Amino acid sequence: MKKRIVIKLSGRLFGMDNVKALKDYATFLVKLSKICQPVIVAGGGTIARHYISHARSSGADESTLDELGIEISRLNAKLLIYALGNKAYSHPPTTLQEVRHAVDDGLIVIAGGLHPGQSTNGTAALIAEKIKAEQFLNATDVDGVYDMDPNKFKNAKKFKKIELKNLKNILVHEDSVAGGYDLMDIVALKIIERSKIQTRILKADPKTIEKAIKGSSVGTEIII
Image (cartoon, rainbow, N blue to C red; front, side, top):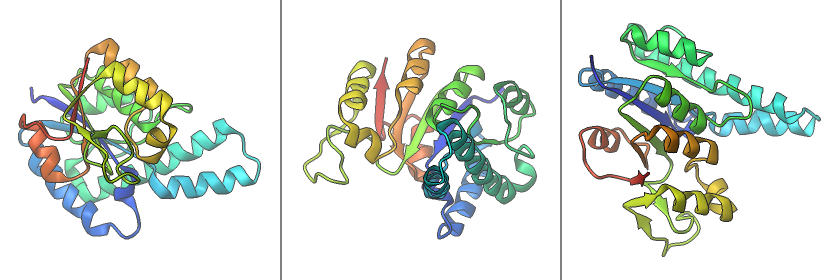
């Protein structure tokens, strides 16, 4: 059986100006599927934030906003499924149990969100736990974890490795870091910790992701 790798893909990839990037990812995932079984979780990105903002201003409650974000992430997942054709499981699974059945089919599986109150990072960590994935790669808009938000501070220092408890502290105390770029969240970290999932935060770039799967030290490794 091929090793299973869970990859959370930044929602930015699914923006309207990224059609070529999506096709490039589909080609890359087909190539990747020869050495492992990729299980992808699509983020909601700016499209989800747009809908959530509109719905919030209309008075929608938070759980409804969560459900809206999940629907958008599943639409994003469908875009990648269509680009993959018969190489992908036919639709985004909607429960952990369905994810497991989908993975057993041996195809590339593309999911969106699953449960309200849970980010797609938390969802990806749960899926990695459920299917006993060898690795969880959180592919984001930045190339790893920094001591400060690199989008705002030019002297921000990147960690090659970071202990999980230290990352927790960054997320708890630095709102600008947690909100400014999509690192991880506390729910995801708790799942990683309890199941000892090998996790790396890295740039959402096919070459970088391939290097990580082949064992290179790219991005930031989370030490449990």
